[in-house]
Length: 164
Length: 146
Image (tube, rainbow over all chains, first blue to last red; front, side, top):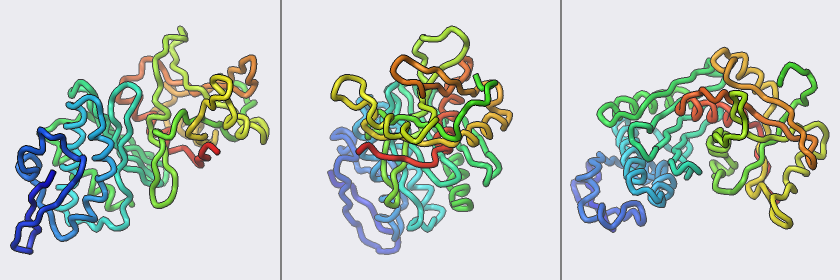
């Protein structure tokens, strides 16, 4: 499917194709309408951060989990773009299918790991941040509440930028 | 459990399949779900268990990699992850895990090195995942299956 995005500053519409990222149903509407991502000049670099995880998320057998995971990853992308994060040295996010049918999204660094567990029951989905002694043995976790998602992701991305 | 001091410096966690693995900057990484404790209902002492092998001698890694779940079928198709016991001990001493994380030896007929990482059954779901991530953070090395 083809999604239309405007590359900021270019003044022209540019078509980007993300094969396999969206289901045929989702592809019926422009991706930008569902996930309004203010793509900047680093579009492809930023997208590479989440593209592998998006592919795995798309393979989830539970379509609700797949959708929640994709929304989360694209919200991540939006936050990264809005904070104008330099992404070239950041590792990609990873997604794993878990035996209990949940989906685990992780961002893995030598001294800390960020994780999002996307569960069949949305109220059970949660996030965590754990760090080694080098970062004070930080341990934080909570629920993923859609209304607060951007605030949470902004906090987490800032943590990554400052500590990676 | 850990009241006895006879534990080696490292334990070996088998990786059941390559689906637990990914690569990052040319290195292999493992998803935290490798350490997600499952409630298999096989214990009644308030603990959940996840198998490991204790590295009592230098044959244990190779032995674990060769371990079979059926004749001719390797049990750990993804390889093994290695954790230093001092990292487990540090985790336990952090206070947050003092009463919910432990480890033990549990030799079985064909595997004298066998043991378990233990997590208290009462641990809530999100803390189970957090514990798994903390254990994944303790992984010092991943050796893929040959």
